[in-house]
Image (tube, rainbow, N blue to C red; front, side):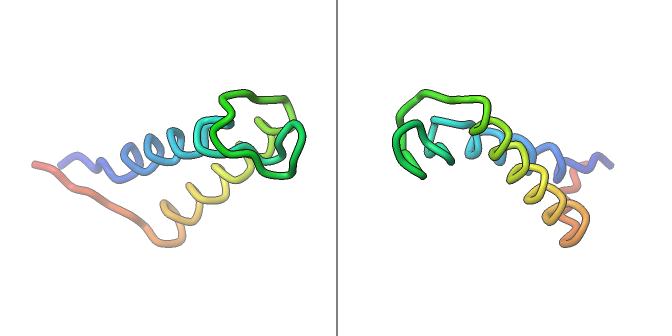
Length: 69
């Protein structure tokens, strides 16, 4: 059996937390900017920390599993 839970969670979080796609924290002129399609080094660092925290919660604390086969 293949466990697709980590793969699906990682892909969804990666798409949702891409800096500038849906939101950017911190923005260039404001604290939060929505849909500006621009990024900065600080924004990449903040989104990386958020991604790591959420993926840790979903995969280790909650234990999301999607089994196939």
